[in-house]
Image 1 (cartoon, rainbow, N blue to C red):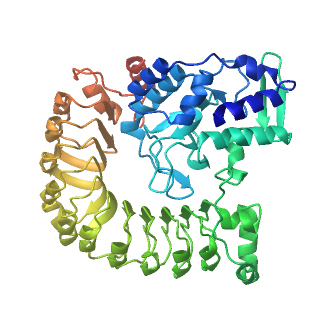
Image 2 (cartoon, one colour; image 1 turned 135 degrees about the vertical axis):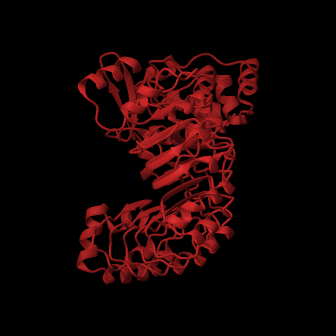
Image 3 (spheres, rainbow, N blue to C red; image 1 turned 45 degrees about the horizontal axis):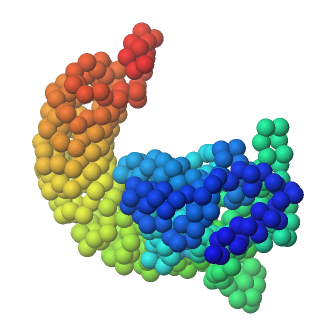
Amino acid sequence: MTISIYLNEILTLLKDKLPQLEASLQGPASEADIARVESMLGIQLPQELRELYLLHNGEDRMGPGLFFGLRFLSLEELAAEWQVWADLEEEYGEEDNHYSVPLGWIKERYINRGWLPISEDGGGNHLGIDMAPAEQGIAGQVINFGRDEETKYVIAHQLSDMLRFIRDTVKEGGFKVNDEEEWVYWMYGEEGAGHFLDAVRSLALPLYHAHLREIPEAGQMEQWEQALDDGWRALIAQKAASLDAFLKAKQLYLIREGLSDAAPLGQCKELRELVLSGNELVDISPLSGCVQLKKLYLNGNPVADIKPLAGLAHLQQLFLAKTNVTELSPLLDLPSLKELGLENTRVIDYAPLVQVKSLRSLSLSDLNAEQLRSLSQLKQLRELELDGADEEALAGISALGELSGLKSLHLKNMALADLRFLSGYRKLEKLKLEQVAAKDISALAELPELKSLELNGSDDIGNLAIVANSASLKKFTGSFAQFDLLKERFKQQVDFSSMIGHMTDEENERWHSFIR
C-alpha cells in the first residue's frame, strides 16, 4: 500500500496550492481493465504500477501533471502510446546515439517494447516503467524515453521511490505552480526548473539509491588540474560549466581544436561519445581511461597505434578515416565493436576483421583485389560502404556475392558491367549507388526485400526500367530523368519525394504535381 500512502500525502500537501491535481485524477481502473491491457502488450504490469491504476486510471487531458507537470496516462492511453512506439521499433529501434546512465542498466536503443509510457509531455517524451532492462537493471525501474531523450536515466529503482521523491519535494517547497489563463500546471524546482526530464540530469540518481561516480581522489584531481596547460583550460571552459562538469560529461565534441595532447581526457570516466576529428593526435594512450566509451571519432588524426583502445569493452563505433593506422589486430580485443570506418587509411590487411564477430557495419575505400577477397569473408556484416576499387578488384567484384547477409550497401565511384553479384542478397533492403556507372542493373528487380534505391550522380545506368518490376521497392531517389522514366511503371505506390540534381522550372512543376 506504499503507493496509496505516498499519493495521498502528495494530494494532501497540494490541497491548497494545486487542488486541480486531485480533481483531475480519474476513477480507479478495474482488474479486468489491467488484464486487457496486459494481454494487448504481452507484458504483466509490476505490482506498484497496478496499485496506482487501481487507485486512479490516469489523469484528465488538461490535468496539471502528476509527475511534476508530466500528465499521468490512463491505461488506454498507455496502450495507445506503446503501440505507436511498437509500430516504429523494427525500422527505428536500434538508432544510434542512445546512452544509459548508469551504464548497463537500460538497453541503449531508441525504442524498446519493454518500456511502458506512464506519462507524457505532449511532445513525444515520457516518464516510463522499464520492463526489459539491460543486464544490471531492475525490471520496474523508472526511466525517461521518447523523441528527444537520447540519454536515458534510471530515475528511480521503482515507482514508489518516484512518488516518495515527489512527496518529499512538495514538503520542502521545491516546486512552482503556473496558473495560465486556461491551464494550471506545476514544475519541479522553486523557480520552476522547466521540463522535469531536463531537470533529472542534475539530480542524484537513482533517487534514494544514488551511485557514487568513479572520480579521482582529491590528490589526483589536484594533480590533474595543475597539469592542464592554458590551451586545455580555455577549451574546458568553452565546453563545460566547470572542471567537474567536464569530468562528468557523457559527450564531448572536440573537432579541429589543434589538439596534440589527449592526456586530460584520461580522467573522463563517464564519456560515452568522443569526437576528436581533425586534430593532431599521435598518442591516444590516455583514452584507455575512458572506460565507458561507446562511440569514438579519430578521423583526420595522424595516429597510427590503436592498441590503447584494446581494453574498451563498451566501444561499439570507431571511426578511423584519414589516419595512419595500418594494423587492425587490436580490434580483436573490442568485444562490442559493431561499426568501423576505415576510409583512406594505410591498412593493407583486412583479414583480422574476420575474427571481430560483433562487427556489423564497415566503411572502406580504394580496395585492391586481395583486400576485396578478405572483405568477402566478413559474413557477419549487415551494412557496407565501399568507395572505389582498382581495376583488378572490380574485375573480381563477384566475390562480394558472398556477403549475402547485407541489409544496406553503398557503392561509390565505380564502373560496373552489371549488378548480378547482388542476386543472392535476399535480405538487402537499401542500396545507394553514388557516382556509379553500371551497364545493367536489372538484377535489382529480383531482390525480395529491396525497399530503397538511391542513384546519386549515377546517370549512366542501363536497364533501369526493369527495376519497376520490383514488388518490394517503396522509395526511389534519383535524377529527374530517372524519376520520369519510372514514375508510372510500378504496380505499388513508390515514394519519389526526394530528388537529386538540377531541374528546370517545367520539370520541377511536373515533379511536384506528381508527388502531391
